[in-house]
Image (cartoon, rainbow, N blue to C red; front, side, top):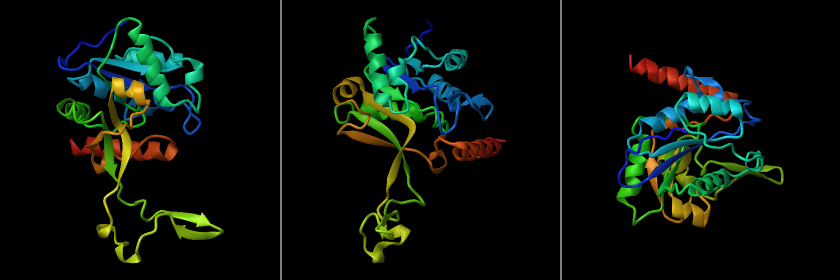
Length: 245
């Protein structure tokens, strides 16, 4: 078993990358090629570049994903049980299962950084910057979540269908419908979900009562869940690569 070298002497942080084998929206998406690498490899590489992550674990039920994860330097100490790898299985259950298994070997962590493979558009310092927010505010907050500002699809513009007619989802005066007059709204993207371990075990969520934001840039507001997302993210990666030339 390979263990990542402990770089953060203040807190022990586990990087948890969930990657079950089944995906109906985009079959095999966790190992599909994107930007020259399997999708999951982008999250593994980001975690490896972190100076504050203690260990990187991939949680999967699929042997092919195990091979890919190991190839790019992540640990897969055990397969995820099938009952925790269905379409309806909450990710938090897999996280808590992993923490429980590790604790049997007296391996414990102060916090868990959930890195969604479907959010590969990370900047080099994103993970460590989020961890620093949590560590520097350890007594004030229990979690840090990456959020991107919603630009075109603000919930204030969202509609519902009621008795066959279009109605506003949120009642708001027409006088304030200009985008610049509306409150700024944010969506949580999977760049990083960071939470104290004790809080996770007690509240069973990465959204406890006390959460601080980690703001990401506009081009990072994408997750790979279907073929259209895949095409968009591939295009963004090509664009960012060309910017560096």
